[in-house]
Image 1: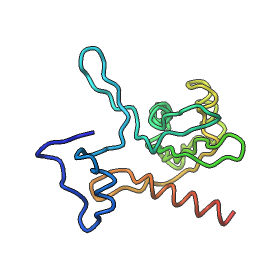
Image 2: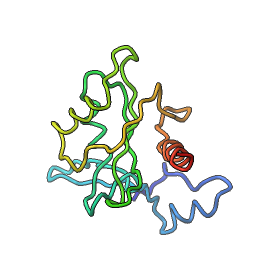
Image 3: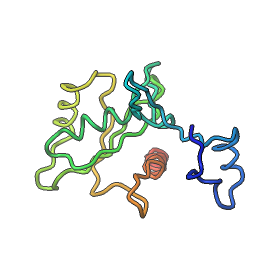
Image 4: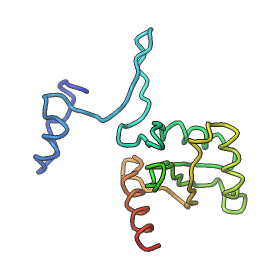
Length: 155
């Protein structure tokens, strides 16, 4: 929650979104953070990006950081994918360093199993040439969610 003279007054021509984000006089960023003993604040994830799988909370950022440590991966974005049994499972959208040296899905998932708890390993991997971004470079996870939703409907 933020408040100050550098925080926006609201969304232009969208009073409903303004009420939702600033209804209590503070801007609710939707970020989940922890404060360390030395006062350092660490942003862990966005509340809407947390994946709930079988009752476990999974940070999309944690999965992205681990997958980004693979030498053949340039970018990763992880979102929740609906699952009949677990509720949600991670779905990774991956941009490889190059198309010619792209890891296979099995290799990438094996890498994940070596570096994270098995319940956090993505159930689906979609290789992309790029990830959707705003004009200022911010990742548009909502566009990935919409893409995933339409793919699931047509499948």
